[in-house]
Length: 102
Image 1 (cartoon, rainbow, N blue to C red):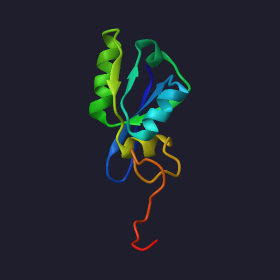
Image 2 (cartoon, one colour):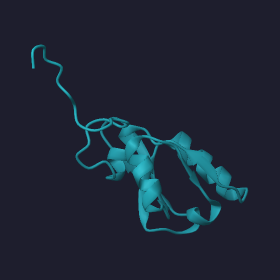
Image 3 (cartoon, helix red, strand yellow):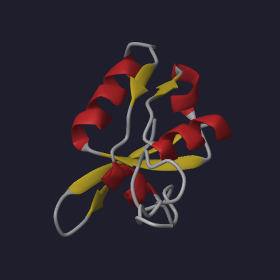
Image 4 (cartoon, helix red, strand yellow):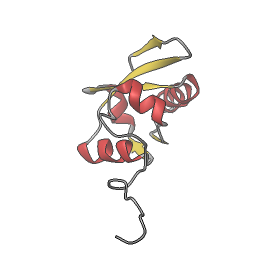
């Protein structure tokens, strides 16, 4: 398992390389939890940035030969570069305006 530390002006996050399916990427963007198998932590093509507490849990699960379920918050998703142009996690569709008389 390969980890790096990413420093920013207000906090730091650890970068972890994972193998994540397109369906899991969609769930991450929607703010939903994903299940990560032990085999997916060995190598991968996606680098995610996690807070130290979550990275510690992931390393612990890896050492025990287990997978884990994580839910990334908006800062982690943005730091990982997975969010794109979305404004808020979990937001469904575009915003609607409620105007009377229309």
